[in-house]
Length: 258
Ligand SMILES: Nc1ncnc2c1ncn2[C@@H]1O[C@H](COP(=O)(O)OP(=O)(O)O)[C@@H](O)[C@H]1O
Ligand SMILES: [Mg+2]
Image (cartoon, rainbow, N blue to C red):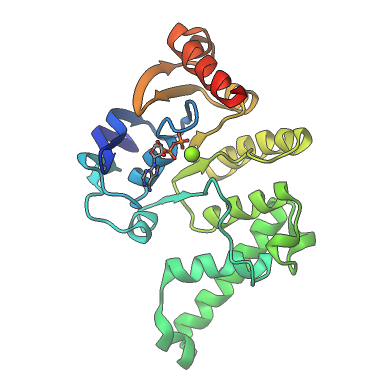
């Protein structure tokens, strides 16, 4: 059984076909890349997989079970966590509080438990704070625990987002352009970090990334989308030499220089 399976998924926004007949099997332990020019449908695929969108056609299976009809938090509860292309953190809370609140939502023991300070609440509370503390250390963020995320360098904000996802103890981690907006040294650190958390947390990772250096360094297998369709899938070297991929990216370059 694959960890994640996408079966003939298509998605339309009104008349726009954003994803067409997508198939995928992701096995436990893999580190896969999802690449393609801007607008290829990559983020839409993540939104379909993580319960933010319902596929127009087809289905997504996680651990052999269909995710049809599940809300994002229910998908998370099954063991899938993600980060967003545009960082989404609670900006009025500190970094430490961000890593606690994500877990509160996840555990959901209810308002009454919090008011009455039940034993379960107190125990959960202790566990939550411990996990947050550990994540801060692991991610090299201890120094920023009491800062607001917006006051952190960009690379560090991305780390907090990865920490927020990890705080949910996922088996599958989806990263949407984790290196976006990072400077070269932050990118190097990110590559090391992703590799390390995968080993440490025994995670399966699926990563969207625009920076080829990141993808080629990290991924064992890469899926390439163009206009919502898979145009290539394989090892980094194969994909890099695939004429359809080269063509798709040249088109993208021309657009961006137009
Ligand atoms: N919520 C939405 N409503 C309408 N169109 C959308 C929406 N989200 C994405 N699109 C369109 O779907 C296509 C794929 O977008 P997206 O998945 O964000 O691409 P990528 O992440 O590969 O850059 C684009 O043409 C985009 O404009
Ligand atoms: Mg995107």
